[in-house]
Image (cartoon, rainbow, N blue to C red; front, side, top):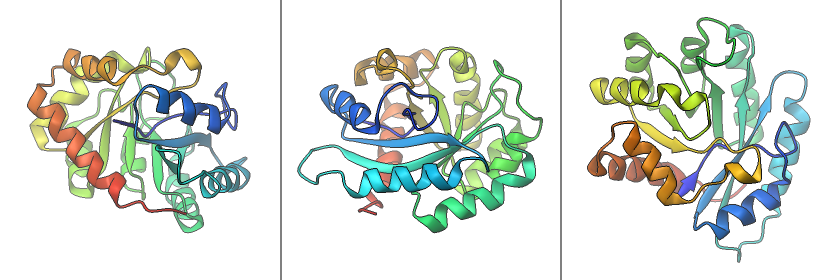
Length: 217
């Protein structure tokens, strides 16, 4: 099991990256990504801190830690340069904060993010057909989330992805200790979104392929 969307105290989370890792490990997860919120104000320091943490994570602790970021509430023309910067520095999981229905998000964010070098479009809200097709063409994951509020459109996102063949990912978007749910609970959220056991297994296989491309930083 995995979670490729989590926040530490490097942004608006409550835990150190090491605390996040150990809590997920205790719940049976095999891989996570630390994906703190960034924009131009903090991307350099946050990327450096996350990469430093991942490089020094002991190999004998049985949970893989992937370095990531979440591009959050940024102007549309900043997705490409910021994702390019992060990728060049060594970030492996680039999440974009999508057009959730529970926060004010700049219209067109889904499209601008998908046109950049990202891996996951988080909580994309009422994502339209054209953007869903673009996610499929670019092999970008659309997120099904356990996070309160953002999860309101899980069923819609699942239907769009299944309709057009886009890839899905199950994520927790954790900020606090109580956000960290166990794998069975995460699977139940996927089922509530209308996904079958076979579809959930396919999601896991796709994400495992992505995770397995990562060795170390």
